Length: 177
Image 1 (tube, rainbow, N blue to C red):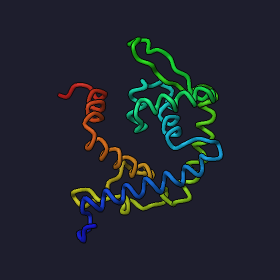
Image 2: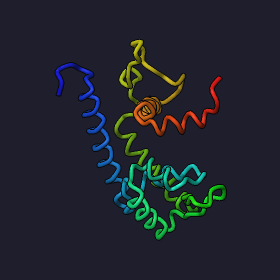
Image 3: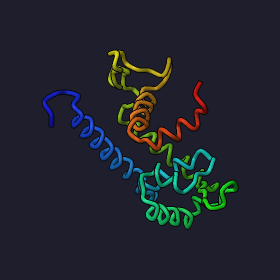
Image 4: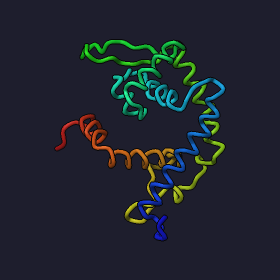
């Protein structure tokens, strides 16, 4: 790695290592219920109750369409997810959580949150969360948990790296003045 702190290689290495270690930790939490990390990502996306097109689920869960279809088939077999034809675009299929899926997600979410809380992320100081270009630690406002700031900063990084996601967020924001 670079001997210059903050080099791009350091960022990549740190993000990769953190993702792998967190996935391993959460995988152990979810293993008791035979839920994979990939299935957990799908359940979390669908937990908003809006239903999502399979193409969106595939992108957000970072799974190729064929793999996602097999995974969703398994979740359907476990009565955690159901699929319906999109009422607006009948060529698309939308996925939703079942009532049982919502209960399981809520139960597992508590366990996952408890595991993450053990890491001390929720107590992490804002200074440890990151520094803006101006040299001032970013916050989302008073009372915002530091973990939420970390998630917001990572989402911002993802938006900057993923042109497709930039378009979706721009469309959701509406026309610019």
